[in-house]
Image (cartoon, rainbow, N blue to C red; front, side, top):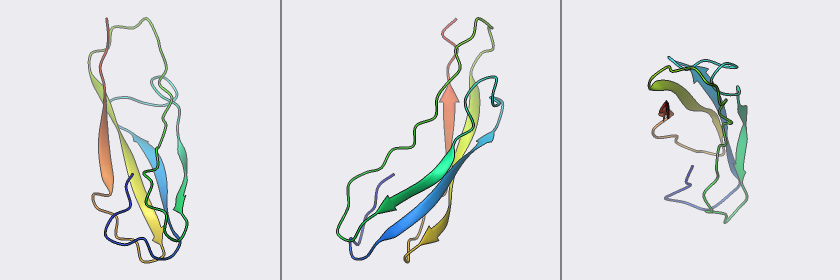
Amino acid sequence: VTRTANSAGAVSVAYATTAGTATAPADYATTAGTLAWADGDTAPKTVTVPLVADALVEGTETFTVTLSAPVGGVIVEPATATVTVADPG
């Protein structure tokens, strides 16, 4: 997640995963938290979602990561990202 346009002031945004055709805990670990930037910080932040390896042949599945509850004048755009999990089998 990248902070752009302005580095003045501390800001934060919450993140959370939502099931799609991939579901937790079968395909990934439910993940939620807060990303925070200090005044002057423009370094990208990473949301890590652990995937679950299994022997099932499931095809391509998806889930969503949503950003919400911005603090400090943040405008979140886009607020959602669809994550595609490709089945290696």
